[in-house]
Length: 616
Image 1: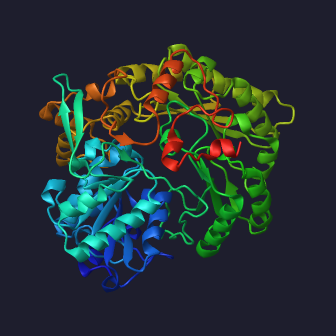
Image 2: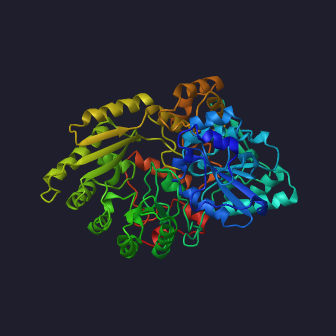
Image 3: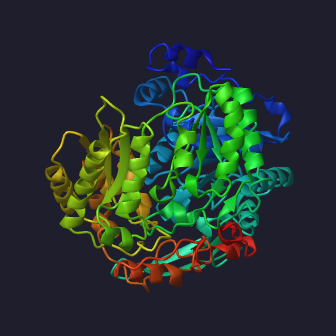
């Protein structure tokens, strides 16, 4: 129940629906009946966070327990924050309206590096000290997970426990450990000692980092109960993994307002730029029967009329055809649209296209990633121009008139000819449309090209590569724009400053904690939003701390350099990544996992199991 003070300021802010809770399918419990309260915090606005599948899954994991209650917390927008600070109103959770500082666990999902400053801002709004060392009591414990936890070091001084890898089982275990140590009356140190012994947890305070004179890392030393390497957690059987039977139906419009069905984790492809493709290995598929049953249940309990079949590469799901054959019987009758994001151009069949068009025809999205074959081979995309043209042929013949193509600028080994190749490939797609005799009559074609700036990420073959400087990226963006010769192609690019900061934070060490704190104190937050990003304030923070951001973004690392994340084990062999990096510089491809196992090592954390070959 929201306090009168909160209710009063709701009349003075935009979109008060972000802050009131009470949505269909939200979980309300009696706080006196639970042993552990968990504030799940998404460090961005309600509209972004409510679209996130991971939050939905972990919300169910906790609330399925009788002894725990998970509530949602989102970053308030600037107008709400101003009113909160003016009226001394601490950050609250949506379900109960209670202050976040009163919870046992405060958890953050780190989906992107430019949300780090929001984590500090939310802790401060809650009245919780931002540094772990300044929180001596057992509760609240501040935890964090998500893809950015794979290099936890920039946030290491703020977070008590990082959760590595899949969160379903570790979240359940964490709740049990908190409950146990509350009952024992343990100290925070005793709790952390216990947590550090379990797979899937990383306690940064239990690792000492020493640096060389040149700023590189000399050593990382584990202490207390911490292992030399903290291993990520893996859910082995996706059919048995916890999945929500109900989605909370938002009270206002959000980014992705629909049923999302996860069909498998991992990726067979091995694109050398793609962090998610390596972090979520090994491949683990759900059976079509389980996916369909989950979709039915979620449609019944939410009233949604769209289902998105979610994975890193949906058309690589071995059960896709039987799943669609069965699902379309009832989704067509009930006018429920089935969307397939993350399609590949090299396995987009006419049969699949026909199924996509049954209910609703929207634009098709594909990701060639690079404009020339040489560069596509260097990044191991394993897609040819013939694949692209064959796919758009089928799409145009099937009635589509809009195609979105995703590319990256700044990839390792890229030249200006590769950049121009992006525009040239877009032009070939336009020309193909007008060449086809059976194209939709009386309609023009629209090709949308999104060219994001490449950011090297940990646990990829490109983790050692220098990121292009802002000047280089700007030059390439201008060259791309100049290479477009038709209004049928629309180009969008990312700002070079935000890409630079993402690159700095992605491969940073724990010395960046001081920079993040200072930037936040200078007013930095919502850094992923172009209209709120304060580049100058970040640069001031680096200068005052005495660190050079280019050291983190624009420097090539030697293969034998100790990297800030080397004491975290995500299952990927370092020798495998080095070999893939060397092959990239020779434009040599590696076949995908169903053709031949490349020996990435990811199955070692899963008892040697990987669905890539067993379901080939």
